[in-house]
Image 1 (cartoon, helix red, strand yellow):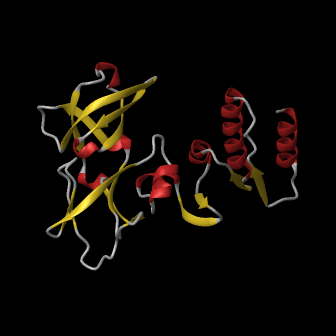
Image 2 (image 1 turned 135 degrees about the vertical axis):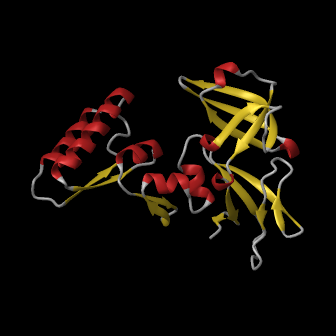
Image 3 (image 1 turned 90 degrees about the horizontal axis):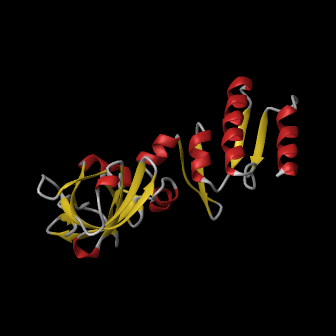
Length: 217
């Protein structure tokens, strides 16, 4: 930890640079110190205006630090953009999985008379007329799923299989029709219990269509 902190400090005090490359600078730092240093790095960046390029495998670190994020996989560019752009419109299933915790839910769709549909939810998408895709999926962020009483208006129902308590937020795992399993992020988890059937609501605009793992345009 000390060697990494010294190396980080040396890089930040230099005045003869126009950009600073930070390669996994917080990897072995303990969590409390990591949070403080992340905030301090952001502060220094704003005060000096020096470009900082942070290399990290920690998506929460990238989301909290960066103005723009470049997501790489196997040396290839997957997507670049602001944290909000990567979260709200991931360009492929890898970015949807890598950015966000829990990752984006991916639900397989069937082609039914010109419409893409699933038995799990009543959400549908028009089938692209000129697509040769072999796999159609709906991508839905756990944060965009609302859980309601099963008798309330909904787009589907699911049985709670697991509840993870993370303080204010909770992660609820549900099994829907056709053995589809999804995760929802909610603050109402303390009033729920495993085995309960819940109604599920999702805004149509928050259900993104993916063709062979790539966001449909």
